[in-house]
Image (cartoon, rainbow, N blue to C red; front, side, top):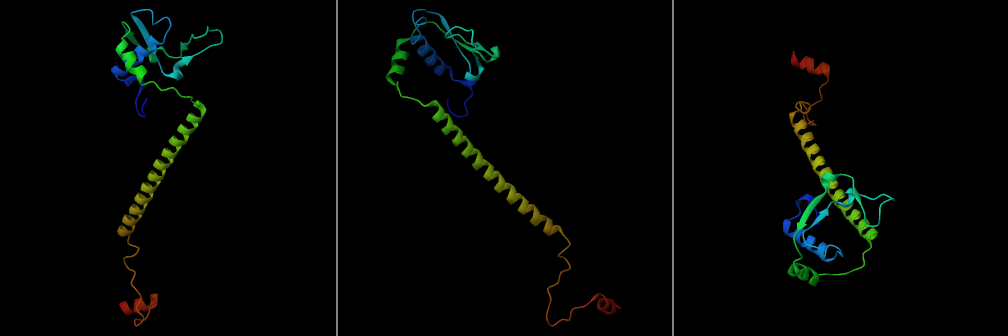
Length: 158
């Protein structure tokens, strides 16, 4: 499935195509009409040691969806078989590459977030400095004007 697609939101046309492939490639299902294909996420499958070969159970029955197939539609199966590509797949290597890609994307997002937070902190510091009275009475020292001490300021005031 494409990234971001939820398994509950699979388009109906895609479900029909997949169900027709399942029916066509099933020894028993290919001979029968009016069958129901069930599907669920892989994480919902439960396999126990005492189950027969090919038998599975589900952790949650709410995550099980069904598609009804009335009969085999050869045009759909033929169209899909023409686009069939067989290749050897190293699932562990693909999993590692997928995790690396996801982690790289997470790092990019975190770096952008840190950059935005740093800019926001800098902006806040500038705003705080603009509102501060600390620099209000700072006068640049002029070499021609003598520096007045506390006593001299008091006398100058009087």
